[in-house]
Length: 238
Image (cartoon, rainbow, N blue to C red; front, side, top):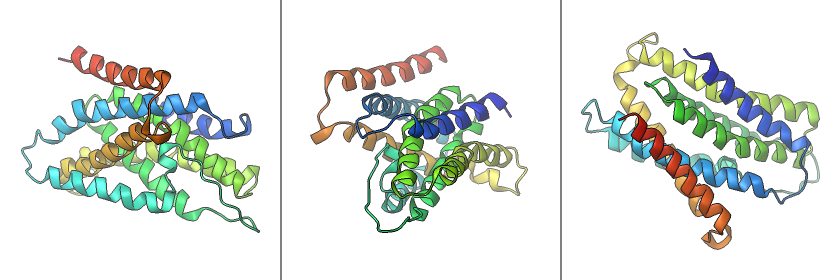
């Protein structure tokens, strides 16, 4: 168990969420660039690392579970309103409304994202998830404030979201070492679900990073940089 991974995952999400109290307004250009970069980086890591690793066990059903994960993320987004992509949808309510569906789906999403980190040397993936959680946590904080949940409650649930990825890491680590029953035999299939989620999230971020699916020069550079860093890390490990 590497504590630095836990700290990076927790601090990225918590700081990204708490930043909602410092930056106001709807025009967050830097966050959009971080989102585009993280989506490209996460896609590169998934293709170069996670998918090949999942097939090392010669399990022919891994592809099925990748599809399950992809479809499961579509279901999650029916409740989260696309918060995973950094979307900040505003809904007008006469009274304060707790966004239960968004909170539950986003926490489950973050928990599953932390699971692959126990599989071998996944340092690059730690950075990708951390970057991805910054705009997601910021969007979550915005939703809570928009729904008039109060500062204390907003901080509490931002921190709750921040511990979900580390919790997934702890659970997956116990799973992979056999501490939880015999579930380690199904580890690659569980990773298949996570891979499907990553594929959906990363590709959606890339296609929705600009209005009308058009990339300006800065976002194109951010995407190319994300892919290039993922590729450089892969080549360095050969």
